Amino acid sequence: MGRTSLSSRRRRSGFPILLAFSALCIAAASGLLIYFLVVFSRREQQLPAGVTVAGISVGQLSERNAVARWERAYAEPILLLYANRSGEHPIQLHPDQVGWRISSEPMLAGALASAAEGGGFWRRFLDFLLGIELTVPRDIPLVADYQDNALEAFLRDVAARYDDPPGRPTFDLDTLRVYPGASGFALDIAGAMTMADAALRSADQRVVYLPVGGLGNGRLDLGSLKALIVNYLDSQGFIYDGLGTVASVYILDLETGEEINLLGDVAFSAASTIKAPIAIEYFRRLDREPTAGEAWLIANSLLCSNNSSSNLLMEIIGGGDIFTGLRSVSNTLQAIGAGNTYITAPFFLGVEGQELGSIAAPATAPNESFDTQPDPFNQTTAEDLGAIFALTYDCAHYDSGLALSLPGGQITQRECRQLLEVMSANDLERLLQGGIPPDVRISHKNGWIFDTVGDAGVVFSPNGRHYVISVFLWEETEFQDYEKLWPLVEEISRAAWNFFNPEQALLQPRANLPPTAIECEGNYLPPNAEAVDLDDINSWKRNP
Image (tube, rainbow, N blue to C red; front, side):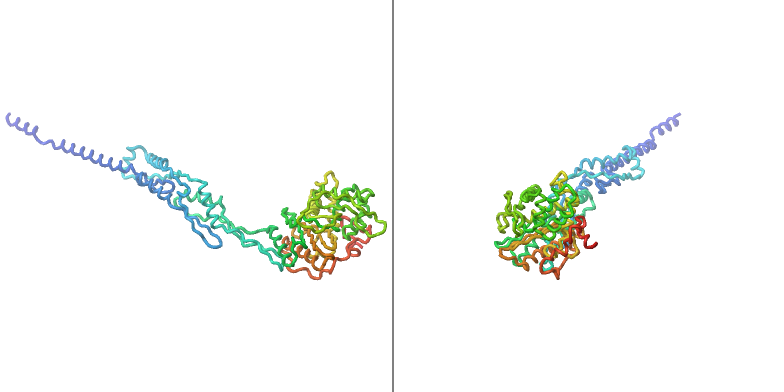
């Protein structure tokens, strides 16, 4: 009995190995759990692998390092490249120059929220224990802004420094041609704004080839032709604004409406150029087809500048009273805007029994700085006469112009076409016609006296660039030097032709021009009244 008790006591007093081992395992497990929880917690402070913010990889970076990485990347300057004919010019644009500002807080919040895509905390911890790497392929968009006006100002400064304007046109006094200057370059500000914006918002595409467009001169403006004409006259010793010489030039581009007006408001003796307005007034008064005799009067007045025919037309206009006709012509000129043009006395015929006299001249306002000693009874300006031809052209082609200036059907589109048709047969081969190629259509009316020569009309260019040209020259003299003044008109006409028709330019004055105007009768005046067709003035030549 005593031994049994002793054995029992020994068993009760032995070391509890199993219990100790279990406790040790529990402690070790707890330690490991705590260790891995600490490691996992530290890792949880990093952004998940695969996350990018504004295109920049920030996976497995701490919040501070991630923010520093994208702010550093977007603080780098962008490179702008401006290429022109002098080379490629690099320009750095630092983001802070345009007030660049990144809003990192919402971007970081988005990146942190991406970790939740891996499940709850314990799920992510379990994946960690199992060695499963959490990868979240997600890009957090950039949140940033800058000052648009600052960027635009920067680009405009770039343009001011590197844009190359087109070169100035040049001209050649020998060929009477105008040449465009060198092409230029200009920055497309709107396009550059868009491209710079994209570069500022890109982490890796931070080089911009600026959109630079070539600036060709394209169609030359009439200012270059005006400079050519002035320099040409100077080279010939004819001062256009001199004391004893005056040149007046009006040219209108009928396609664009652009014009040259070189002393176009100076008053000159109209001479026979006034016969174009007389014919207009005749048609305005006519409410029927002209008789064969009246058609012949029109042709004889416009083509041969016949004074008797012109006086007869004004008598018809005045209902048998030539002075009423004179007043009617001048009143209509005022009504259509040719306010410095009038005729107040009949043409002098030098025949016995002609009734002479005049009516009062209308109030006019020509340029008083130049005195060409104009005929007090018959005056015009290059500008007025050019405008009259422009109005006639618009009436003939578009049923506007004269048709609108004289409303109510006072003059019709067909009548305007007939006016231009008749004057297209004015083949004197000198003055304006002598400065354009043969066979080019020109509807014009000329006139000259001892100190003045003038010619105005419409040139119908084969390329469609039709234009009005009106030229008057005055030289203080007792007898006009035709060999001096007429070639000047022809060369001004050639310069205009070359400007509007560069593909068919006349590089030298036309050779073999007649010494003076071709005689009208027997050449381009229909031989009799029955041969006059106002719709086809040269039909008599084809059907003799």
